[in-house]
Image (cartoon, rainbow, N blue to C red; front, side):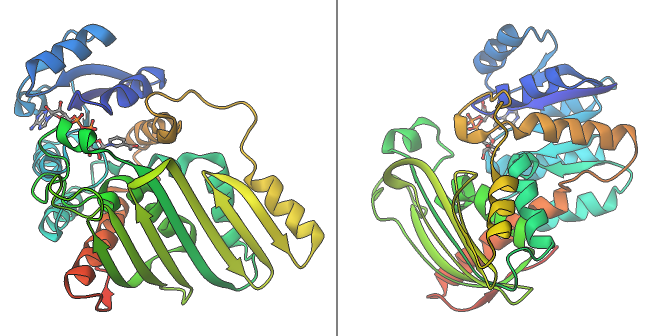
Length: 349
Ligand SMILES: NC(=O)c1ccc[n+]([C@@H]2O[C@H](COP(=O)([O-])OP(=O)(O)OC[C@H]3O[C@@H](n4cnc5c(N)ncnc54)[C@H](O)[C@@H]3O)[C@@H](O)[C@H]2O)c1
């Protein structure tokens, strides 16, 4: 049995709590938040008696094996490093960090503790059709891949940003649309198409002037290690609540994959077209989602994977280093934008 402690009892916490409670071999042992009211509210809601207001006390608790880091971006690094140094396994929410120094400290701690399982949340890697997408690409079903174009729109209002002090700030959040919302889709690009080595970016705050100090809109070109070229455009000031469109163009087939469904497939060969459509069609029976619909159902599967990794002393499917590398892509985009779109190499940890 893996005994879990959740640090941070805000918006994402119930998704972790219900995830833990649904995984065989996992037990929710304790909750922690510096905000006593939130802590007690979540404790009552989910029947968790053991509650801490200082995460160091949770780290000293011998009945906690795995720490779920569900706090704001700025606090991730210290909690993760302290947890690993205290001998606890860790699963950290995205984004691993806000600046290169966060990522470096976290990566060093993960590498210093190979005996512990450390993972970063990217729940969409556990969605069946996303895994099928990766398999199609790995098996060269699209032929030679040429271009990958991601367009992502969502809506984050001024009220959203004003709700919590950390949101929309460089110090608290580390960025805007890219580091908070688009990060899932940027991670998906890395998951399906492999490492990204260079970017050229432009970022702006177009519709949240005076409210946030980070970008609400960004565009950048990408070069994958494989040589494939791509582009990303993203905004969180649109009238569209949440839409992602990923178009990939190969020499044998073209796909538009929108909100995790194939909405356009064309191929030189009809049988290949059918194969791609079938592989990417979501299962009819949807899994349970806790939280907003676009969180998807992957948290539970990822928590189950981490619990199994701990029990079987193996690496988790999404290591913390892998999650750090997706955040590192965003650091390179910000650096490029600060340098007027200069071609910037993505640091790999
Ligand atoms: N994977 C997803 O789909 C997804 C969705 C939403 C949020 N998130 C991520 O989850 C994290 C939390 O986001 P949220 O929306 O729940 O934020 P939130 O502000 O609602 O909650 C964060 C909580 O952490 C607490 N906290 C801060 N510092 C702490 C500390 N040192 N010790 C204990 N508690 C502390 C705060 O008091 C707050 O209650 C962020 O990294 C965010 O990006 C992920």
